[in-house]
Image (tube, rainbow, N blue to C red; front, side, top):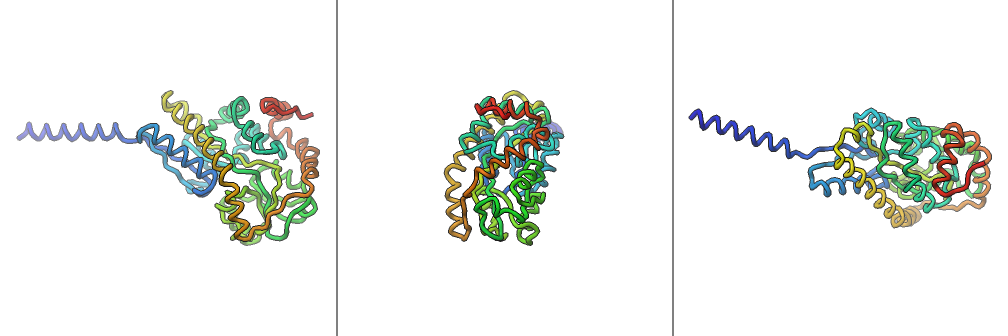
Length: 333
């Protein structure tokens, strides 16, 4: 009887050990936006790749709508290694690494092709070198369209129409300076509080692309008028804690890097194919869309006022020109 009990106990211990050994390793990803946003698309693609390529041995848990805290808080935790992954707007990474702020300079990119060139190859390597020094590894550049300007008061067709309107902006010195240069009144408000601030008329407007605008249901927050102004492209990197990354085996590191590339390709295709659908849906629902009559005037204000004022804030003229060079663009004099 004793022998049988010992054998049963040994079998139970072996089963428990095997179960623990075979248990999937789980990682959390903090996502600021809803599931049906560009951030959501990138995060879901990342999860799909990791779980399929690892045969389920690595599991990804996604937390949308800032469920794990606002983007700045999540990035702090990623930097410390307390959280492995987060997706956040580029402006929220700038307090941790100012050179990444050059991506927020107005009219840095003229179109999506330039954005893609500026987030791949040598350009991506340069940006990631800055991020890694500050404790982050960029796995995915989430493409989220230009930050089109919307408001609740009236159409914006030229630079005079923006005067005296109050806009929600992220805590970004460059974006704040940009709105001042254009004649608007910028008010920094956290992303989690943006919808309420718009709904309660604390501010008149905000800036986001069509897919994000639809996902956030901004029409319900009085955002009736939108203008396609191309002053800044909204990049939202999926970052990994460099501390967590360095503790991993090479095969695990490769899994996450490859998953990040897959997610970036997926979200780029999504933006190209679904941005127009979101725009059509919003117009059908009542959104009034305008195109600027005088965008060269906005661009002139950006280069004459914002770039000189913000150059040191984003790492200096040398850093700006180093990035422009790897992007194949002329130097800024």
